[in-house]
Every structure is written in structure tokens, then in C-alpha cells.
Image (cartoon, rainbow, N blue to C red):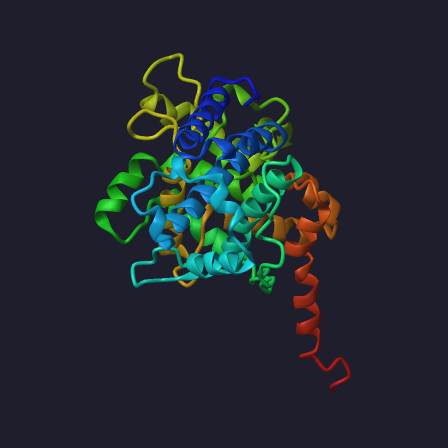
Length: 349
């Protein structure tokens, strides 16, 4: 899955289209800031910032009677000069407000992310001389939430999940009938996720030519846009080979099809379709845990760290640029071990 693959080119173009469509409805004075983000950040960041700023302007129109029925694009820059830190605090309360329909209901982390876009926007306006007043200065900052417990599967749960996938043994008869048609594909996806820790976005982007069975490797485009070669074990090799030889040809619309994992509609699987597939199986295998494709990644990272004790190794395999990201998620296992040790009396008779 090289950067210049058809899938990656189309994916980037789709994101650019989203960004440019958002720019059409935002005030023109916002565009230079988004242009800068497009140039020095990932395209996903620029798109997210565009949506966050759109939400801010929606708030301004809702809260200011003078802007009633004003298109977002026509909100004057002069109005922003009149804002102060209290207006920004009110916006943060607006983001957290739940009117019974979950209109926003952002938690601290979500509000902090949206505020990052807003703070950056006002700082940009002031640095470049478009504004003199930065209303985010002095505004409340969200307290950092305590780290959530990382949800992962243990070895028994992994084996139970794979067993259900391999045998299509779902209790829902209708689901079981569908799963029997994609049993090899679904099993290959689970085994690949649980034995390599790749992201779901990387998985759906895989092309058939990315798999090198001689070297037991495949190429992915990482979150930051760079490519990496990952290696797989014999279990992954066997599962992929069986799916490619037996089941994949059934869902190929043509001999030129490049996507590795295909849907029953003979199209490349999407992130959403893999998420739904994982939910369907894990709800049966591990009903007491809310599991997603990312939790497969956490499960692999945990198992790899427990086996190797090498946090650098885990960071490299998972593609974390900052090892502190890895440590935050997986070194916490050591804390669990220390808690368990306190339950034992090593000198008891």
C-alpha cells in the first residue's frame, strides 16, 4: 500500500474535497489559517479544524441576536475583535451542553481538541496582524482527564473470538448465514489485527500486491503518511493464503481488483464495515467488554509487551512516533503487576 496507490490517492482526494467544501461555507478570513494547516499538518487535522471552527461560528450565530439568519461565511471579523475570554468559556459550556438529544455533550478531551483549533486560529489572526485581540487568552483550560483503563482481551478471550469466527458460530441465525459466506475473510482480518497490531485504516487500505508471502511481510501507509514494512507469523500467513485462494475470488468484480479485503458487494471494505464486523463477533465472544478494531491493537500491544518487556519494540511495531504514547498505554501493565504482588504473602507457610 504505497503512498501513490490508487486507494491512497483517492483517499487523500476525498479528504481534500471535504476540506474545500467546508472552506466554501466558512468566512474567507479563516482560509489562510486552514491553508497553513493543510501545508504543515496531516490532511485529517485540517479537516477536523475546519469542522471545529464551523461549530464555533454556529455558536456565534445561535448566541448573538444580531447574527440571526446570517450565513456563517458572512460573520464579520470585526465581531471577533469584540469577544473576550468569557465568550470563549461560554462556548466551552455550549460544547458540553446536552439538551436531551446529545446536541454536543463533549467531554473534556473533546472540548480540549476543539479549543486547540480555536486557540490556533486566534493566535494566527493576531500574529499576522488581522486581529489585535485574542479572546482565548485567559479562557478556562480543560483539566486533563485521568487515563482510562485500556480495554483489551486476554488469551482465552482471543482464542474464543477466533473459534467463533472460524466456525461462524453466532447465536443469531441470520448473522450466522451471512458469516458463513465470509468466514475465511473475517477470520483472516481478526488474525491479522491480533497478530500485527495494524490500524483498521491501514487494514482496509491493503492491496493484494502488498502481501509478500516469501518474506512474510506487507507494506502499510502509517498514520503520519509514511510507509512501513511489517512482518507476520505463520498463523497470519496461513489465514491470508486460505482467504486469498478460496474466498476472495468469489468477491472480485474483475481480475484487476487490487483491494485485499472485499465486501459481499464486491467493493473494498471500509473502516465502518470492519468496525461493524468486529462488533458483531465480539458481542458474542466477549459480551462483557466493548471491543473495537482499536482494542485488537491494544490487545496485541499488551501481549507483545508482556512477552518481550521491550517498550521500544512495541512502539516500533505499532508505529508510535513518540515512545511516551506507547508507555502511557502499555507500561501501565507494570502497575497492575505491582498491585497483584501486594495480594501475596511470600513468607506464608
